[in-house]
Length: 451
Image 1 (tube, one colour):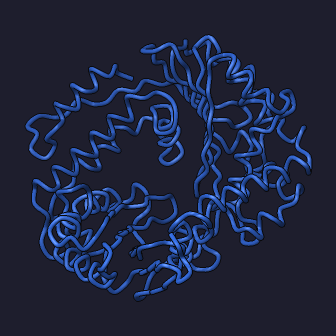
Image 2 (cartoon, rainbow, N blue to C red):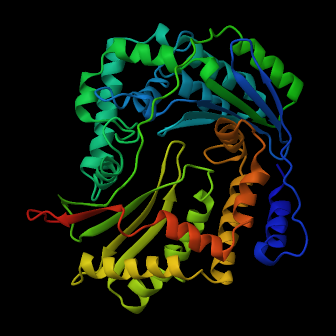
Image 3 (tube, helix red, strand yellow):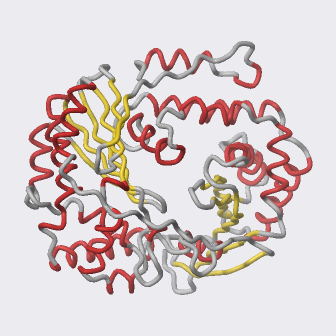
C-alpha cells in the first residue's frame, strides 16, 4: 500500500478520468498466495508504512445459505465466534487483544461473514492463534447456555435495529416484495424472530460443521510483516484445523418483476416515506457500475437531479437518496424519498418518474458522469489508504478473491467506472429501471404514533 501522500497525489492526477490524455498508472498491491492442505486459501501482503498487522478472515457463507424456518444462523454465528473456543475461555479473546493494544470486529451479509483482528506487528502470532482456535475448536466450548445467551442478544439487536427503529422494517418488507418464496435474499440477515427462538444447539453445530471450515474460508494476513515468517506462522496455527466436506452448490429460484407491486405499512413515524426498488445485475456484472453512476446522477449530492428539484427548487422533499445495492446473486436499485410536512408521496413519485424517464431518453451530460466517476475514484483511494478494518486493503484483497478468484482486482474494479460513457448510462437506465416493473413501498405514520 502506498503512503497517504502518494495516494492523494495519484488521486489528483486521476481527477478527470473522462478526458484523461494518458494512461493512468496501475495500482500495485503485491501479495503472496498459497493454499494449505486443508483447503484454507491464504493471501499475505507486506506493508511497512505503519507498525501494525491485520488478520482478515472471510467465511464464504452468509444468510443466503440459510433456509426458511432456520434464518438468522449466519449472524448468530458471528456472535458465537466471540464466546470462547477450545483453548480460549470466554472473555480471554478481548482481554488478550486489549493487553496487546489490538482490536477486532466482524460483520455478516447475504453472501459472506468476515472477521478481522488488528494488532501491533509484534503481536501477529497472537492474532493468528485466536483466529485459528475459533476456526478449529469453537465447538469444544459451545453449550446450550451459550447459544441461548447469544440468541437473546441477536433478538434484542433485531428489536433495536428493525422493530423499534423508525422505518426499520421497511428494508425487510422491501426484500420480501422483491424476492419470491424460497429465494435466499428474501429473508433478512438478522433472521426472523420465530426462527431465532426455534434454533437449537444441534442446528447451530450442524451449521458450523458445514460452513465454518478452512476449505470454505480465505485468510488475508497484511501489514508490517515478513512474508516468509508470516507463512510459517500461518502453517503453524492453521494446518491442524480439519477440512470440511464439500458444500453443495446453491439452487437459486429465478427472479423477475412483471409489473408494479405496491404495499403500504404503518410505523411509529411522523412523516411518510417512499421506497422504490428494481431488480438489477449482480455485483460486477455488466450494468452494475453504470447503475452506481446513474444513482449518483439522480441523487448523489446537492447538485444531483432529484435533490435539486425535490429538495432545493420545489422544496417538497426533506430527503432523497438513490443507490445500487450490489450483491452476489442479485442486486437492487433503490430510491428512498421523504416528503416535507404538508406534501405527499404522490408529489414526490411524479417528479421521480419524470427524472427517471428523462435519464432513459436523454444521456446525462459528460460533466455529470465525470463528477460521479470522480467521486467513486476518491472513495476508492480513500479505502486504499487504510490497511485494516472493513473496506481496508486487507478486506479488499479478501473480497476480490471471494468474488473473482483474483485478490489483486483493484485495477479491473476501477476500470469499470473509467470506461463508462453518458450513452451507456442512459441505456442502462432504460433497460433496468422500467417504470412499469418495480416495487413501491410506502411507510405511513401509525395513527397512534406520538413521535
